[in-house]
Length: 109
Image (cartoon, rainbow, N blue to C red; front, side):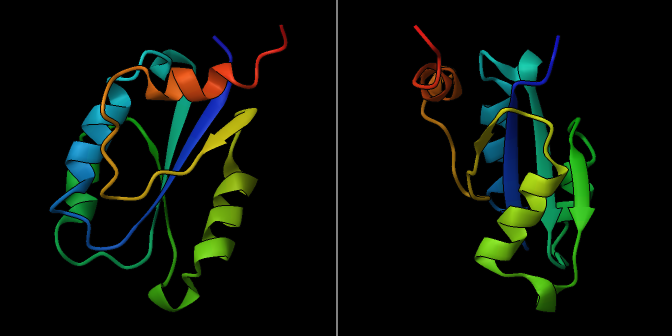
């Protein structure tokens, strides 16, 4: 199945929330068509270890290179999906159809 959606999450020291975020993302109905990209900017709190249990693409940048816009643009340059979703490390989708609903607004009917 082709990748139609890329979820890009910038993270730094997100151990208290990143697993909830990722568990909710991997429960999404469109996960089979989705790639998850995490861009870490210098976590030292166990975040990197926690990320190992997920099937995702991890990229690391030095903390001094983090910039809200530039880091997201970097993620887009790595993405394969037609649509991009930018949650943050403490974003927990409220149900399993949030990404599907967002994507539905871009379908040609």
